[in-house]
Image (cartoon, rainbow, N blue to C red; front, side, top):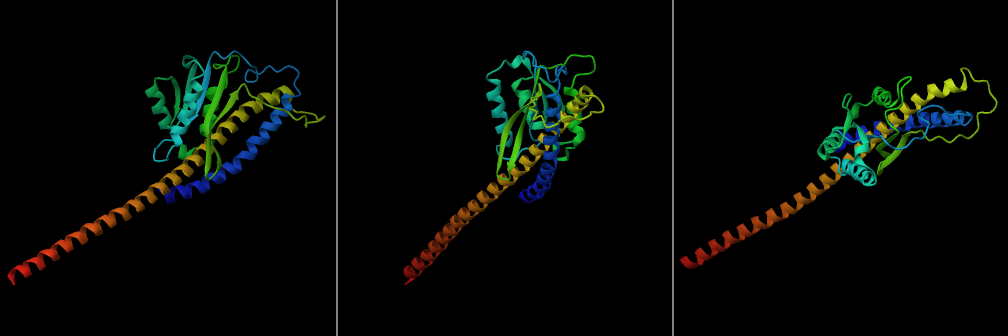
Length: 261
């Protein structure tokens, strides 16, 4: 399992590195465009009272990955301790998170189980984004949307991270300049917001998968080292018992020989 996780980690790490620039650049472009809008009217940019909150939780489908799942759940419990659980609904990636939320009696609105996280693709992020985005001429179902996932910082460091998906927080740099936009500025923002949410979700899923592989590789290495150490201890105990048995038999033979004499 350690070898398999190490091989998959390399591929997952490459996907994370390749996906980050797209999401970061899309965020910058959207921030620059929204900074030029005088009246922001998009429902995912407007700040409202936190009456209905959605949390998108990303965990693993399987165990044997150390404290990966428990760290996410601990971060969730700390967050829930400061809020009313009755206002919160959950969308979940990963069966471990789903099982935990069900046991806690929390409201799970959606479980994304197909495709599994190990085979995650852009389609899964698009399906989740479609469930979050309001339909035309409808108010958003949720006043605030949060994403809880494990950020992949390095092969030895991965941290449970909170990111607010809606209302979208964007900081424009004003680098757009005087340009002619086609279509209009409002229409561009309208089209880019769904793409931004999809890219943000997809990037988080890739980082979570890479973190899971890295944690499983470390966990399996620790298990192998512990098993090797235990094997050495047991071998010493076995050799000691065997030596004691041989010594006892020799003493019996010598004692019997002396008695015959």
